[in-house]
Length: 563
Image (cartoon, rainbow, N blue to C red; front, side, top):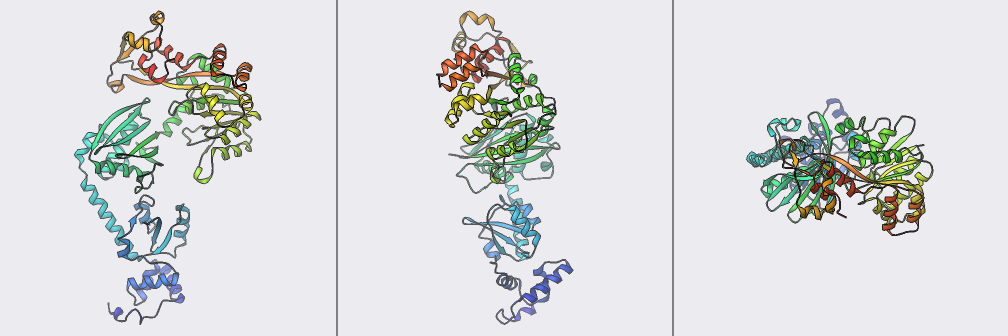
């Protein structure tokens, strides 16, 4: 260019007046400030960027430097970076935000809200930023061609009938593979997806009716790693970090409805494993409308006891059990039955899995400081009648929940324990005063989900004597059982089971049991008092289902301890 015959040392530096004039021209012409300066000045793009950097006290990123940095598309996705005309890079332990229009107040406001970490602002020429985006786009398309569709045949899913919007838009094979896995898991009514890294392969399993089922294996370490990386990108996790566990979540549309996925990434000796919890909020909300305890499969005695506990004017109802045992569903069923519109009901959960009409539901947000304990304190100032605490995880939450139950509120909550008697030990280890605990507590319900035999392929079958003896069934009571099993069919996906029922053991506290707990008597004595008070244990409830021919003896042994 003719204008560049002068050296940069001979050219007059850009001053504030030049910058003000350029901003006015940029606004009137609808162009960037740098473009306005280029149109009126004699500087090259590099010289102009350096001059602006000095004037604004901003470091400048040149194209040669950009090539040495690592894009952080896991933090700021590619599409979002293009829309806001900026790019995020990693440099050592820091983040660099390259911007081509530092004069935009809108950009600064967005960046302050978008990033929860400190980022260093760097000035980059708009042409360099455009070139960078073009190169990245080419790289992404080139990677798409590396993957072979034949490898997808190893996954047992109906790809041809997919209705995912993202798949119909012509995405890469890795994206297609991930989305098909998500879709097929949702279609199979799986609760979780397990992606397990092995030597040079990735094993895919679905948890259906509480049991893991192997779906297929993806051969190739590179493809397996790309699948995990794709899950990380969708969850906005750090794809470069492979040494520590990570947790995230994302949403995807399947057949026009939003499905939530909670993601857990765990490092292993072969790479990284991923577990995705599937939450179909719409289906759960549709299911929860009119949900009652009868629909969960509890026997009549358990239903009567839970209804009694959930109808008390104050106190605490505790539901315990392992993850995925239906604790939250049971609490929602109980709350739905007592929600007549005359009481103020507030819940605090992590996350909110169901949406209840007429109930104030508060999601826990630990990043913003909204913990169970802090939220529960605020709830008590909101004039509630009934409170649901999603989970008691620490001593502080336990203390506040007990105080709420002692001050005229009915508290519904859960805690992780194996049975109703282990709950006593859990609260004792949290440092909770036993007298306050038993004074607040109305009752404890421990529950499990037992798989039901498939009605299409179940048949009468007598178990072996070894199995009967190992199951703790006395020989003189064998004739009371209606033993059945199933071999599997198309209706139950070959598992032999279809659907689950809930079983429960319920401890309703009376004065005798309260005195035994306060006196820290042995669990054996508390169990005797509970049995005399009408408590039926989980093992008894599971064997009752075997007697009725609803489930197999093997399933009862899988779910409950032989005692």
